Length: 56
View 1 (tube, rainbow, N blue to C red):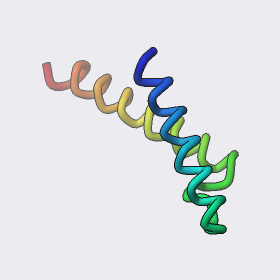
View 2 (tube, rainbow, N blue to C red):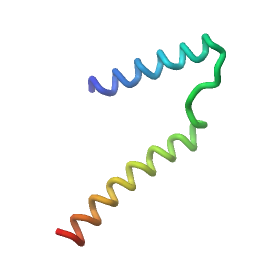
View 3 (tube, rainbow, N blue to C red):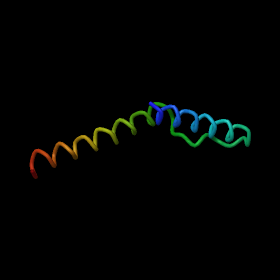
């Protein structure tokens, strides 16, 4: 839980700094960003499943 709160606070600070400097936010569009995160997670889970299933 601490990691989640720390990530949220850090993200908020980066957002504030970028907005103050009038720079574009360093984040992908919402839907494609969420899809990318889900894809990374599913890929990691698939790798673990494949290794356990076929190589152990």
